[in-house]
Image 1: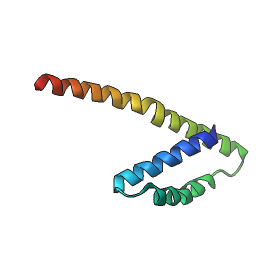
Image 2 (image 1 turned 180 degrees about the vertical axis):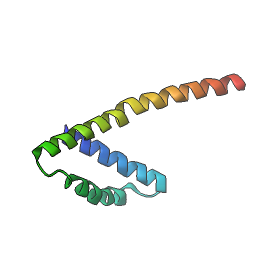
Image 3 (image 1 turned 90 degrees about the horizontal axis):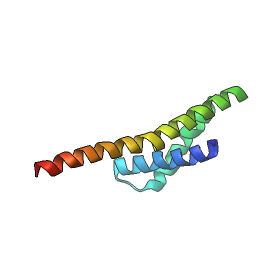
Image 4 (image 1 turned 120 degrees about the vertical axis):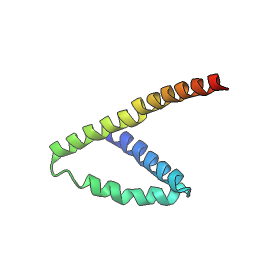
Length: 86
C-alpha cells in the first residue's frame, strides 16, 4: 500500500510542479525526492511508520478518489451554466 501510494503521490507532485512552473517534469522528479526522504525520516519506530502509512493512504484516497469526482461535478455544473447563457 505504501509503495503504490508513494509512486502515485511522487508522480502527481512532480507533474503538478512541472505544470505549475511550465518546465520539464524530470528535474522536479529528482527535486521532490529529498523532500520525500526527509518526510520518511520522521517516524522513530514501527508504530509511527504504520501511522504514517495510514495517513499517506488516506491522503491518496482523498486526492485521487474524492477530489476528481468533486471537480467533475463542479465542471458539469459550470458547463451547464455556460451552455444556458449562450
